Image 1 (cartoon, rainbow, N blue to C red):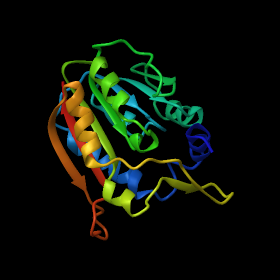
Image 2 (image 1 turned 60 degrees about the vertical axis):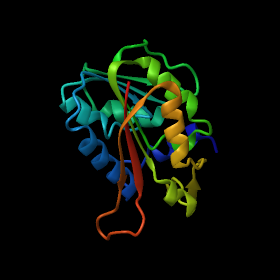
Image 3 (image 1 turned 120 degrees about the vertical axis):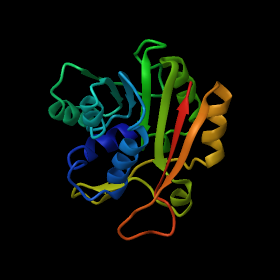
Length: 207
């Protein structure tokens, strides 16, 4: 099943089912970006808008890109604002936004579904203004090594999404090769109960 089809199915329950990865990602995003100033945000794989709402509360204007029409339909229902625009697109294609436009680009739980992540970093660099930030939050490689994958059940049996394992060095090299500076790297653990390995890893890069 393609990623587009999988997330169209998942959109029916995405906001309501038990999902500690989704919930911890929201915490990681808010804590990581609280002290970052931004006025215009590009969300890569915005999903149902769980982080979009927070960006709007920060008085930012937002462009959300996602491959899933189902996810975007949910996001539009939740974010009735003239400060947000949602666009259905495949991130492997050229993004339908202007270059040197955004103060912040955020991608959350998306890169695990992309085999070669380097073009994402290249496009992000060109879309950011000088001094802008690129925030990445993904399933930790340690979790991937143990076989953890995005999965869900909408009543038809468990669906496991197509994923690719990305090592820490892949993120580091992709950032360095296009000219990003690494401002922060952080691992994120489940708190209740505390697990022996982190669930997520995040990177804050600057142009």
